[in-house]
Amino acid sequence: MSDREEYELKKKAIFDSMSKRGRERILRIGYENWEPFEEPKDPRDRIFGGASIKAGELLRRYYESVGGREESVAMNKELFELCRGLLQDDSRARVIYDFCTWYRENAEQS
Image 1 (spheres, rainbow, N blue to C red):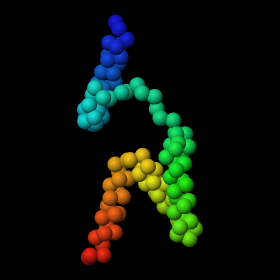
Image 2: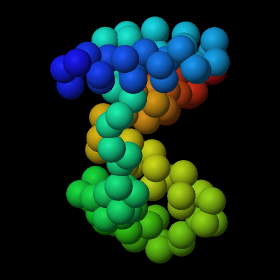
Image 3: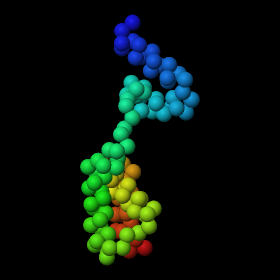
Image 4: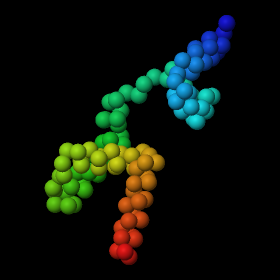
């Protein structure tokens, strides 16, 4: 048995052992695109990666521009995640940004 055949057998065994909901999620992304054996992401990249460092710098500059008042820890975390998402072109962050822009342009008309 080749390495590829063994890989496919293990992949199918994992897929077959999943819940119906899990299998549906895999089928949405495409079984052929699913990689059950990929290495987990290093959490240090999330904290010390380029986007995180730049997001931290942008937040520092933002707080300076509004008089240095930093909001609560929870608020800071949300702003950091949004900023990092925008820098990484995350769709959730982009939708939030687009809504805020739309709101700013349309709220005054109400």
